[in-house]
Length: 111
Image (cartoon, rainbow, N blue to C red; front, side, top):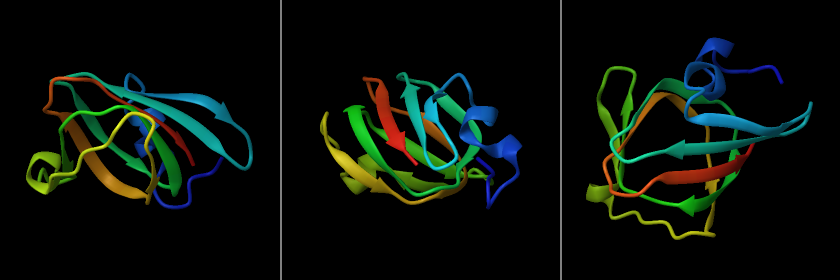
């Protein structure tokens, strides 16, 4: 599936394959599994398509842009997700993600 926004090397599965795994892909859709364990930092990558994400487990996280500037901190925002909760995900420009909580972040996204 061609990436309309960023070069393919920044795609989550190419730039951070130890955290993102393709479960299914065809010309119309891609399903990703993302697992980030406590203390892990996902290297710089993008998500270039909208999608629906289902939470399997949740933990506090900090997202930073390509310059290291914090763009989201779940601890400050109060955002919490419950297992089984589905949410809409807009594309994300280049970013890192750090699991600053005590549980794994485990999400399946259909893009």
